[in-house]
Amino acid sequence: MTRDEAFLQFLLRMGDNTLVLGHRVSEWCGHSPVLEEDIALANTALDLIGQTQFWLGLAGEVQGEGKSADDIAFLRDVWDFRNLLLVEMPNGDFGQTLMRQFLFDAWHSIQLGRLMKSSDDRVAAIAEKASKEVTYHLERSADTVVGLGDGTEESHRRMQEALDYLWPYVGEMFQADDVDAEMAAAGIAPDPASLRDEYDTLIGRILANATLTIPDSSFGHKGGRTGKMHTEHLGHLLTQMQWLQRAYPGANW
Amino acid sequence: MTETTTQPSTSQIWEWLDAVPDPEIPVISLVDLGIIRGVEWNGDVLAISVTPTYSGCPATSIINLDIETALRDHGIEKLELKRQLSPAWTTDWLSDKGRAKLEEYGIAPPQPAGGPERCPNCRSNNVTKVSQFGSTPCKAHWRCQDCLEPFDYFKCI
Image (tube, rainbow over all chains, first blue to last red; front, side, top):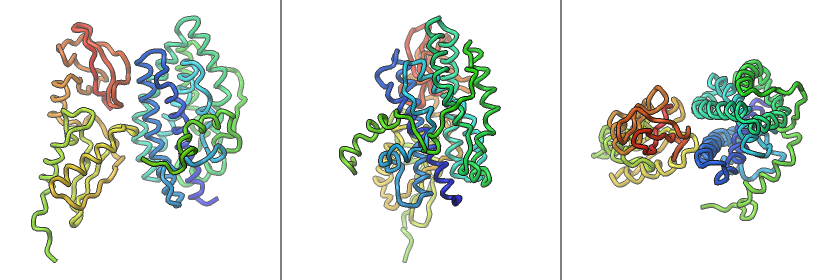
């Protein structure tokens, strides 16, 4: 694997995370429990889609085949996607959506903090921009997880169920492969495993405030960021997200 | 070959850009908003650097279009718009004129403390947060406990 090939994979991983999660969160638009939450989720989705344009735009540049961010987002199928399995998991109820958001935001904020020191100026610039937005996302998702976890009996039960359901998808964030080794050697991105301690400290503190119990299991699903095996949910998501380009290839306006 | 005799100065260009309103908050200009990061002539090409407020802000493409339209109306023919991500936009770049206009319009300007200093309608300090997000990516939703009016707060980032 050449450095550029690894770099492309890294950029797809970053951009596909924000693309797939951005789409998932946008599915709440018009359906949230209250108007303010609807607006908050739509705004979060918008930030993520905006960040996707930067990551996938740069991916297209590095790939050098003249593809735009839109081409990469809309003209690939499941096996080409490099997002974490966590972000393609269904929304479930509002609590599950916010738990997924929190588990991702916590990782995302730490990862972007490291990427701001990337040896690649373009990566550092995107990270600097995205980091401000993600700090805000994390503040909100953490507050909501605490509010609902340490809330009523019903909300507590739902948040614990959401954590139990999503926990097996957390480990994938910290798994490393050849791509990561190449990126770390080039100083472009950190070794994923090096983020784990900071992550555990951060979520440990918030989940304790939320009176929730982290499951005592280290089992982790994997296959998303390598593209080896996505869940069945991603294909369904793409049929909706890519519907227009599938029905009317090349449509433009 | 002679140079164009009437190449407008960069300070003239800044003045023209200061007359282009933000498409979402038309009381302030693009210059007030602090998103114009550079104006320079490269030969006969005018290069304008623009930074986005938020990554996904849908106004970004409209803003580029508005800049282009305004400058073409002033006779600029060769224009290059550049997206500049770093340093990332901060509300510290809002001009004092812009901050005053925001408040006059009913939007509380950003404060380092993280919340509005006072209600933009009745000036009361008795305000409460309704939602961390608002009608556009750059705003949050607050309410005055005295006059009971809801209002937008320009988030401090």
